[in-house]
Length: 104
Image (cartoon, rainbow, N blue to C red; front, side):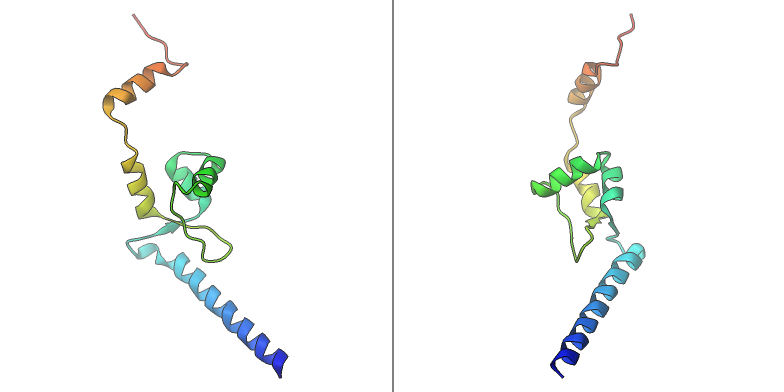
């Protein structure tokens, strides 16, 4: 009987996890859509390693409801906006890029 109870409990846990994953996958119509690591890196314009470093250093918020990692699209959009550089710095950075040649 003890083993049957454990199996029953494990089965219910698996169902709960499955329901949570389905909810994450089907909430695309909701305001706060979620993306995986690959899509988040693409959205931010960084390599996967860079994103993982930001995660491990606590610089970016993510969700891990199990084995998979998810990011809120809304949060990523706000993160991008909060890291906007002033125009003057953008121009200087552009001109300092090695492959940019000045034309006279």
